[in-house]
Amino acid sequence: MQLPTLALLGQLATTLPLVGLIWLVQVVAYPLFARVGSAEFPAYHAAHSRLITFVVAPLMLGELAFATLWIFEPLSTLPTPVVWVGVTLAVSTWGATMFISVPQHSKLARGFDARAHHLLVVTNWIRTLLWTARGAILIWVVADSAIYS
Image (cartoon, rainbow, N blue to C red):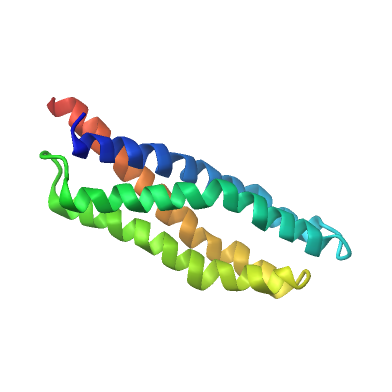
């Protein structure tokens, strides 16, 4: 298998699960934070943060690695701007996670905070849209490659 194909498959295997996961978090997990009792919330949030990291961290690391690989070994049929848009979206999800979501989670780790919760839910749409766009681009690349091969 050629490296560009491996990079595409790696991105599909990491990005598409992240798309599904971020929608689940956005629509189900984060809104339900408000329904956990205040006495139970710190333990609940700590468990959520610890357990979700086991799922998200390897996928995000893999996604970034495979997206970066495409900078050096893109598919021959792939326009260069598509590669850079994909990498930019991957890096942007890291930025949104580190600079927007993590600070809100840090506040919530001390106990339920309605403002931090609201900001987490509202600003998480940024990551939801970024990952959805990455997934759509990758599906387009696969469809485009299938048409022209």
